[in-house]
Structures are given as C-alpha cells and as structure tokens.
Length: 437
Length: 158
Image (cartoon, rainbow over all chains, first blue to last red; front, side, top):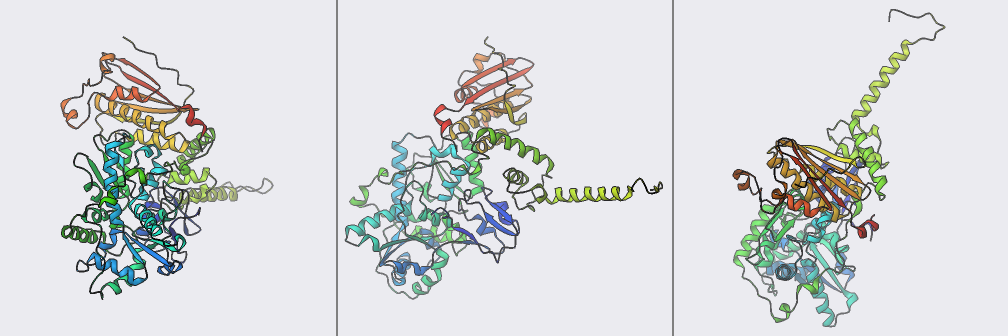
C-alpha cells in the first residue's frame, strides 16, 4: 500500500534526458544512472511527467480491463471526461450501454456525484464559517500539492469526498441493500488521470477505500468504441444532467455555485501555484471558492485521455447544450454534506523538510547556501536534479556529489591539469634545473 | 509618541535578506515567498508559516507603495521568526494615525490598483506576537515583527 503511486517508468524507453525533472511541480524526479527516478514521498501523481516525456517512457500504472473478471458484479464508475472522447453523434446513453457489453453489471455516472457535490459545496459555503476561499478537493493532485507545498492552506481545502467517491459509496450501499454479496461487488473507476488512479487506491480524507480498481480511459477506449459504434439502441437513461457533465472541463464546478458566491476557476499547475502563493500571503480577497484543476482544461486534459483536451472540452460543451438538468429525487435530496465529510484531516506531508530536527535543518540550510555559491546557477539539469538548489540540497542529504555538476567537474579537471603541468615542471632538487621554462 | 526601540537581533540567524524597490509591484511577494519556502524546509508549522507569509508580504508591500525603497530581512531563532522591514524614507510622522485601520496615505493611482486600503500595518500587527515600529520623518522606518510557534505545535513536528 505504501508505494501506491500511479506513475512509473519504462526503463528501456527512458534515455535519461532531463525533460521531466524540469516540469515536476514538487521537484520529485532525479535522473540517476541514466534513468529518471521518482521520490515517492514528493510525487503528487499529477502526471505532468507522463505528458512531457518525449520518449513515452513515463507510464501510468493502471489496471487492465481483464481485472473486472475478478469480481462477479463489476461496476463501472465513469468519469464524465469520457463523454468528451467520443464524437457527438454517439449519445451518452449509448456510451454507457457499451460498458454492459464489456462485462460490467452496472454503470454509474460520476457526473451525478458531481451534482451531489455541487449541492454540498453550496451547503458548506452557507453553513461553515471556515476561512475563505474554499479550495476544491475534486482534483487529488491539487490536494496533494497543498499537502506537500502549501500545508498552511490546508484549512481552506474542502473536506468532502469527491464525486467518484460519493458515487462509489452510494452504489455499494445500494447493491448491498439489494442483497448482493459485498465481496463480489467490484467498483472500478474509469479514469482520465493518474491522480485519481492513486486516489482510488489511497483516498484522501478517509481510512478505507471505496473503489476496487482504476482503469485508464486510454485502456478502455478502443474496446468500448468498437462495441459502441455498432449499438443501435440503449437501455440506459442517464441520471446526470448537464450540471454534472460540465465538471469534466474547467469552469464546471464554479457553474454549480449559487449566484451570490464568487469563484475562480484555475487550470494548470503553474497557474494554480501562483494563485496559491497569493492566497498564502493574504493577497486574495473577496473570493469564496477556488475551482482548482491540475490539468489544463480540467479533467478532459488528464494524461490518460485519448482526445485533445480542447476538442474534448468543446464536445462536452455541445453535449451540455443539448442536455437538460435533472433535479434530485426525494431520496437523493436527503443527503447532506456531512454524510460525505472527510474523516481524516488533511495532514501536512513532510517531504520538503531538510531535517526533522530544527537545529540540524538550519545547519543543512546554511550548508546548501554555501554549496550553492560554488554552483553555476544555470539550472541546466545535467546533474540530474531540476536546478542548482535542488542539487545542493541533494548533496547535503548525501544523495549527490559536487562532482555531479558538470561545471564544477570541469573546473576541477582544469585545475588538476594545471597542477600536473606545474608539477611536471618541478624537477627533483638533485637534477639539474631547466631555468628557461 | 510611542516609538519603541528595535529589539536586539544578534541572536537571529538570517535566512532571507532581499532589497525591495519603490513601486515594484511586479516583484512584490518575492521576499515573502522565499521566507515561506525556507520555513517549510526548516519544519515550521503551517500556522506559523501562514502568519509569517501574510506579515512579510504586507511589510513588503508597504515598502513598495510608501517608501523610496528598502529591504526585508527574516531571521530565525529556535521556535521564533523575526521579520525586519527597513526603508530609507520618507518616514512616518504620526505612528498612531498610521496604525489606524483604514488610514492610508497611498496615492490615488495606487489605491485604484486595489492597494492602500489602510489595513497593512494593522494586519501586520494582527499576525505577530510582537510588533514594533520605529520611524523618523526624513530618515526611514523600521518595522520589527516576531512570530512564535504556538506551544502545542512545537511538539508534534516531523
């Protein structure tokens, strides 16, 4: 369970270039012995490295479709970003029907969970006087980023289960009520991203897991497409309306808010980090809610999708135009945010810490600053660390050596060469000296 | 007028020292951001880091808006953070007035940018355990802020 990240490496493909180490938002990657390696305690599973790797060596660790056969009653929890992968002439009902043909016994729309959560966010904003703005916890990469880099903002994070978790819990409860043996129900999330694959294994805010596995959209798309394109009719009538489906793209959550609330919708980790910095310094005023998504475009921009995020976003928009809102029935309306409240508070992750003892940490910081004075400051990455400071920190932590820096190394070689020339001219006293040199 | 003396600062180890330019809104926040990152690496509690970030950013902004330029220096000593904001003038004539919520001498063009609401100094004082301000018209202003780790957070680090 500990090593439960969803980003792995295809060693044969990795050429040891330094593209990924530069884009990692938590500086979690180092190139060692010609291969990229991830520092487990820093990785937030955003999948940024999968996206940028020019050799396709960074891979998502998800499950194959066959995994569903381990359960007698497999259930598909479908991310609405899947609807953006199919051309518009294939209806959502038809896409969902395809899952039954693939062997799932039920198919559940996470978009409906989004509608629940939209409702809960309004409740929370109205009733809980926690510091504003509330930061959405829908994207687990964002929540983990806050845990690693912005622990001071933890009290801003929405402490409510995310849509896939809400739906997983509801469907499991219902199936157990209907008499299905709990052990034989397997719930699988159809995921657009690595962050949610990890969240399905290692939930944030809860002890136990509600989801039995995660299958990448990229894994399921072609088998599903081959079935779906031949389907004439569908027995399924979708439960989710446009309000939930819209959550597939950035701006969807903000649109679920009641009119009186002011919100920002931010996509892309670099933009988000800027805003979180501002918030942390107290320079963000008058905002009630931040819709924060790690991927550009929101979930349709997830690294496990097939379609270009901009195209997918437009498909989602068109689908929402044609679709009506579906209000909650009495049973659905009975839930409130506290039913899905986090049981475990968001704990800071200490992966940026130089040392657990404050005095030692300070000494290490001074040592880092000293080492940094001798590094070129080009942040070239040739040493395998993302920048000179990261190398200096690695050196202090005994994870690297000054000579890993190509410039320091060259200087050292040059000075050695000079020493050798000087020494070669220095003859033993007993020999006749060559004064002319 | 209550002008307090700057407390002795020999015992603090400087972790960040950055010059701040007059009206440099683009880089405002840089000092605060660096201080915050360093405290995170040193294991300070999220609560203390937040207070330091807000206090130092306001101080930085004050130098940008009101002074001819200055610097921010942050130092630490055991569980305490000290932030000193120094500027080279013009100084504050009436400190109690400057400390009043809503009082601002920021020119209209800066208030239009959303700054200068007269909450800077009160906000800084609010974030600190100790706050001293020393100023001489024509010379400059020194604001010294001390932020301590709350006792219950010191124990459960790492």
